[in-house]
Amino acid sequence: MTNSWDAERVDTIIVGGGQAGLATAHYLALAGVECLVLDNHHRIGDQWRERWDSLMLNTPRYRNGLPGLAFPGNSDFASAHELADYLEGYARHFGIRVRTGAVVTGVNRLAEGDWQVTCADRTYLARNVVIATGGERNPRIPDFADQVDPGIRQLHSSAYRNPGQLLPGGVLVVGAGQSGADLAAECARAGHETWLSGRIKGEVPFPIDSVMSKLAFPVLWFAANHVLTERTPIGRRIKPAVRSGSTAPLVRVRSVDLDRAGVRRVEARTVGVRDGRPLLADGQVLDVANVLWCTGFRQDFSIIHAAVTDDSGWPTDTGGIMTGLPGLYFMGLLFQRGFYSMLIGGVGRDAKYIARHIAARSVAQRPVPEADRAR
Image (tube, rainbow, N blue to C red; front, side, top):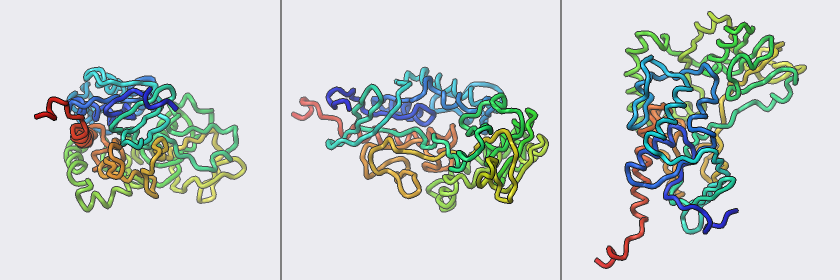
């Protein structure tokens, strides 16, 4: 480990250069707080470039802007690659100090109260650390996946790019959430016999690009920002369900689109393996050449060498602030303070809140110059 006297001192370190980290950095700059963003990708925005090629955002362009810079373009919806380029341009536009390719391996609280942030080749000391990784970067794949015949190609949704990665033959898509529906429809349209395993938990009642959608979106946006928050009983009630992934409806690709594409929808979950083939809860064994695991992600905060989570695995924060560990903050958590926290255009609200808290703490801890002490 690098000695503390060799470490670079920065007032605030932000771990993660996605929309949450960049918005926080912008507000810290406005407050006059020095900060450095550490991102493990080669380029800002790569976390979106690494998603599947056809991924489109579910919110209109005009709602995807971060504080101080509108999202460009004229069509209603943007692609994930456009968002990636926007984030890279956002950091450049505001001169946000970012170090890419920085893999953080440890965040430790020192006895004197500072935080030590360790990368593979460098160590930083900071008054404050913001964990803006979102906590859901690690694919969740069932333990029985390693029992699947090695001749069957398996991909998690995070590794899938396009149908060109698939072997000829059938495809089983496990998980009927948004990603599962999107990928199942794409695979079927590419000519693969495709099964979608899992129960659809709801869907919006109209196409995303319809007139009804345009009329309804302002109402939904208001609800996400003012009704479904930690301040309301209904918001507090649905927060655990949102974090468990049990409430996400289909938005862009709905059941009617799956049926038109020829996807075979099976409510039975994929529960195991029999003779190397995927086994469904209803007893079906599917003879497929490919399995796509659209089973979500698990949160992982193991880089923080302190007790920060409860039994559910989520941080014990209050709106992103760790009251028991001064100087430690979170950004980009699911339902951090409300449903809006998960929306690209909503993350700025949490960023402003966190930045204000950091700025007040930094001012309070700033040494008083000798000349001012004598007054």
